Length: 476
Image (cartoon, rainbow, N blue to C red; front, side, top):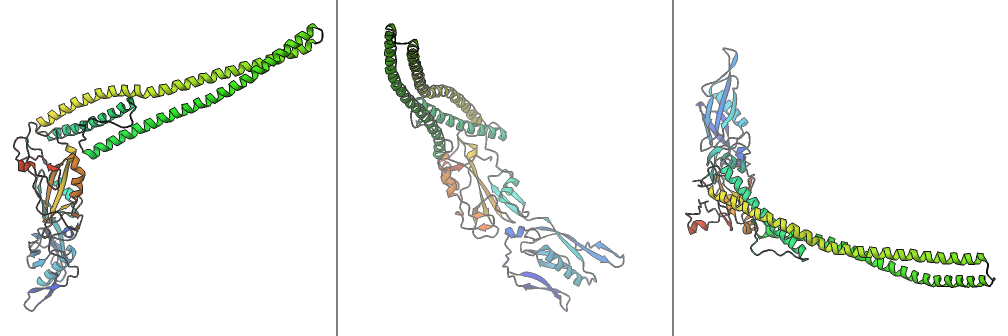
């Protein structure tokens, strides 16, 4: 296929078209490149405006016989009065305008080249079907993405059935229910941490029926977080106890040293007392003077004063030693008392959360939803079939560009918590933006309407684009 250009007029006055080389290998098939600004595509409605110079009136005027709105045909051509059919796909509007102007000038024998303006009145449509509120066709403007197409189709559909038609209220209640389940799980794991603190245990012990709405991996993350808090608390307490035990050792060493000094002072006191007694005996015999007696008394008083100081220091060291022992006992009992108090308060909170969970579960079920379904576990998958692409339907990312004639199928599924990581890893997109690769099998299970009362075994087993998922309720 090539890009067509206008040839010169032949002797009969008819215009012939010749095919020029197309080194770029452009295709007539609708693609993302066709949505680029300045290019036409199959199905586009084009507003053609032609202005000519009127010699008689000496002014420019609109040339009505050719001006108007035209549609690019399925063959990729634009058919105009006096011009005929011209290839219009994969050629810029500027080039096409110049080509039309040249043909009209030759056909109408104009002196001045007419001014031709091509504007796109409406782009060719793309199509959206599946789990959307308003399936149908929508204008494929340039740079439109799959996610924008999903929004244009009204986003997610309303849930099927139910007593309450207020979907917003149902979604709010479902979100609250989901949050309550997570809060209960976190509270139960925190309660296990407080029980471990109370019992001076090293690891958390959880009831066997504890599960996380998002699966085992999410539960493990919560447990690990609480275990880290428990370990940090135990390490901090052990460090404080270690510091206090070190203080006790220092005090014991100080007391032992003071007691040794006290023993030495006792010997000095005995010697000083003996010296004073001798001086007093000599004084009675007239052999000792009063000054000598006074010196002996002062020496005895000094040693006795030192003895009192050391005894006081020993008393204070023993007192601090006892305080350190009390601090260790208080530190060990403090965590147990605090854990018991927090555990009691937390158990009351868990009971309140469970009551609220039952209430919101009843509201959701009364509104037509499922209390066991978490609305934040609903995943949206996009499958795109390119116009004229033999690869067929392939899964794409939300930022993938959508072009003229493309068909977008939206599938919303509920992911089972334990299988959530597996599902997301298996259902990887085959197309991202404009890059196409190997896709998923072309045959994908359609989303079925599932209710709690009329569900066959075959419908209940449908999984959508991966294991561990089930279709979301959809309004019929």
